[in-house]
Length: 288
Image 1 (tube, one colour):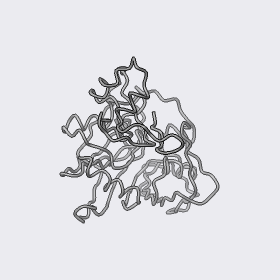
Image 2 (image 1 turned 135 degrees about the vertical axis):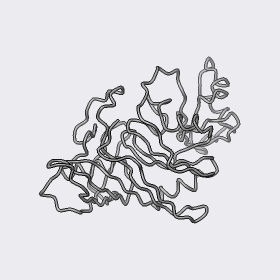
Image 3 (image 1 turned 180 degrees about the vertical axis):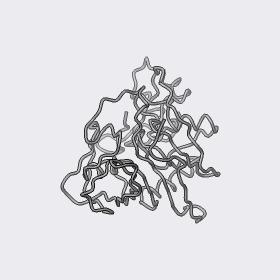
Image 4 (image 1 turned 60 degrees about the vertical axis):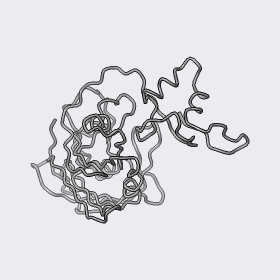
């Protein structure tokens, strides 16, 4: 559900999010009970409160009665924690935030329960299929300042991936193009137009005659950027369920993890000015 914009021909009449939900939902829905049980959440998975001021043009999700979710194997390792941020090392197949069929088996739900941090929230995105480093903020008051680091591309990132060896490629190289993703379509695409995605790619270590570990340094953060850029070079990431072909997704099959690792993060802390540098403890090829 999404709240309407303010203004227009008819001014918004709701003062709180609770008022809007009662007006939006049928009378037979126990809106008050769902609010009390924190079953309504914003996009960052924080609960919608009865008295929250009305937010125009805001998505609201709700927790439905859930089927039993298969347990995602692998531990969420804590790399660093202080009063403001938590840095974890994520296993493959574990979604960052609740969405669709993945609710309890997510980083956010696991770590909120484990650490007793109800306002824990991700500062950036990491695909369910991708493993490695993820930064979260411990309280709502810190969320904006750390999210801005990633939105303004002030974080240096290094990924590593396993992909085929192509001896005809001249590496290192920088792939630069325009990527667009349509809501509801699984694959993103390279399209004509002003570039909005750039990745430096270099061969790091040959695993055997056919496969190698590549070092990927993205200058931007478009959806599926690294997967698309390697695929565009004819070296798709091993076990990629989307590129070059979409493979049927079995939510209970954890045997072929995507060989993509968010390996390093570095940034200047926006609060205290300290240089933060983190390394994943996972190694390629990834196993479950």
